[in-house]
Image (tube, rainbow, N blue to C red; front, top):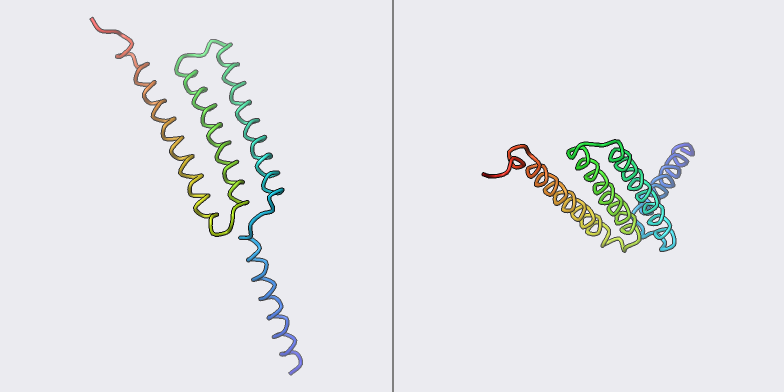
Length: 138
């Protein structure tokens, strides 16, 4: 009988501890931690943008084609968009629980819209650089 009681008590402790642990996952982050995480995300994003820009500059110095230059410019802009998204995601950790999901959805929507606009610009420029459009009209 004692073994069963110990098992029941242990199970109860594990369940309570587990539910408390899960509850902590959704808790609003301390503002200082949020600021630190946002700063780290910003630094990492800036590093990724810098690396993409350096690659683009190297390619340009080597005499890259217009198409390759456009691809490099696209990569730099995509890195900027991703960096902004990562910072926004970290900011969402610092908002109240009820606002976290909408915050994250807004961050994703902003990223998706920016990427869609970037892709549209890229596609438009690609069409402008096609052989048929560069031949000129009579």
